[in-house]
Length: 436
Ligand SMILES: [Mn+2]
Image 1 (cartoon, helix red, strand yellow):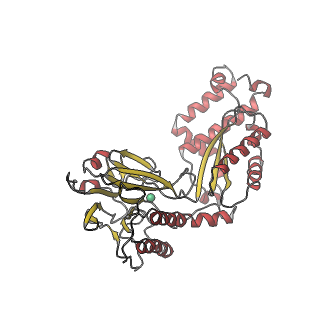
Image 2 (image 1 turned 180 degrees about the vertical axis):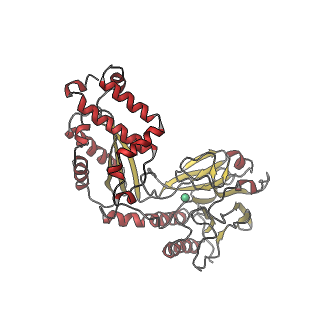
Image 3 (image 1 turned 30 degrees about the horizontal axis):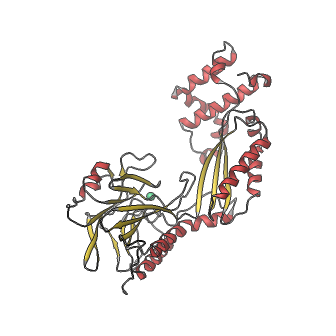
């Protein structure tokens, strides 16, 4: 392989690496294909587009190596297509003289199926049996030691951090790679759980982590970093997504830059309707929000979800048959689907009628009795379960009962609260609304 010409961004830079994780190549996206086939197609390609941008970035930055901290693929039974695309990227890096270090995570453990593909020589995959260390050398000098371990199977519950050897004070820059859960991680399975302290005790200079999809610096001294997934896949993964570009200077100081590489970005924004009086006000506000998003789209496809909140007489319109779908259709019609576009995925109504519940509860009448009963039911899960009887006609009959999931406590409470709202709206004359 031809020697690579080095021209780092500044004279003090010793080496550069890029840290990514959770590529989830070939993730499937549900729900868009019926309403917007064009966007659905963009989404299908988005995880690959992000991966290719990372490869471009490594080449552009003249990086020394790329680290991938697990979950390259979306499932253990990874698609052949995803593996071939992944290999294409690795070959491009290899041709540019850039090495790649890979640990496997819970979505792509070593015991899953793999096609018999040949990886370039400078691609190293960490073992699943013990922590391995690879040394990166340049001109006969070791510039970094990279230690890591892969998942043998999906369900790794042991603390893998305990298997990493401590760095000696005089040894080269040390990097740890792990797909793990540091501390508590809401919404993520606690695979390979460990503490910040476990990682700090190794005296490593940089921990390249995977598993948590939200990019975050757990610590900056030393760097303990989740790069996050480079492409958000649903409204639960909003905001910018990318990878970390890490520059180490000749004194061993580390500088980390987050670089967005997502081509589709999910935005979830709240809009309070409390101060709004008419549907025209609401439309104006929503259009304004979409215009603002358009301005920051920077050539990306933005997919937004707006959540309407607050108390307002507008609630009466929002629950009218067809009102929300028509509003959504109008907001979609105004925007083209293409790079630098904003698509409204959903308009979620979490508003309520303009009643002050506390005030109503203190009244000694039928209305306060009604509210007390709702409170009583909400606080008793056995009572909440009895709601299923009343809802049987809707949820429990015919084919629908096979399709719908059984209700959970949160859903039962939501139905009850909505029923309460509708009853209050019928019971309280409109003139009284504002006074409550
Ligand atoms: Mn993942």
